[in-house]
Image (cartoon, rainbow, N blue to C red; front, side, top):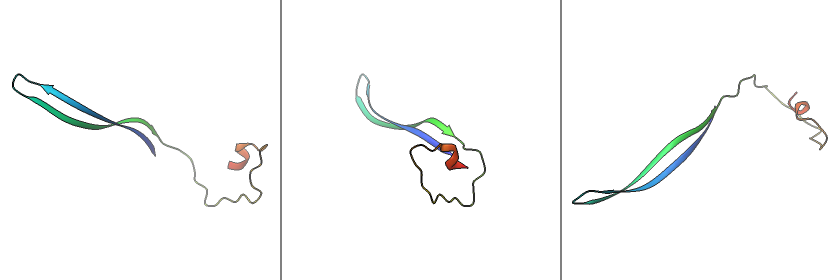
Length: 61
């Protein structure tokens, strides 16, 4: 499972009639979540390497 988060940091000033309060706030927001479904091969051998003209599907198979 892959997740991408955005970390948000804010500096907040709260004004009241008798005081000024400063606070730092940090929060994480989930932007994306991805699950890759499929079988995982036990081994993979590519002794020839990848040349510029080969198709990506040939490498996977």
